[in-house]
Length: 118
Image (cartoon, rainbow, N blue to C red):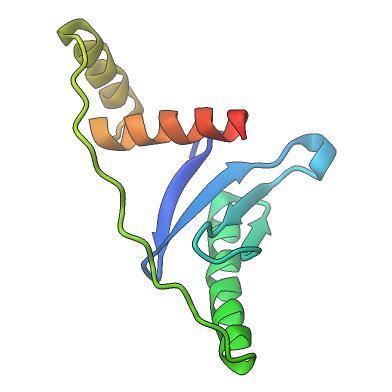
């Protein structure tokens, strides 16, 4: 995986996986937006996802023990966006070069840029 933010799904929950800066210790952070404060980390994106999967189990167990509601996995967002044909073609070429679908590429670009703005 390139050193870029991306979104994965574990147990039905969307998980944002993004690189940590050297100042934050490096490695990767995997956060679960539907479960406030639920996150995992690791040296690789895969380790961060595995840690987040364990964190989901711990988060939901603690919520049950405390009698709190457990938010269900949120539906994946969807919308239709018209773009100029030239932009669509450029995006298709870049996605093919990266070895991913056009939808996956655009979702990763959006996630990366939203992460910078947050």
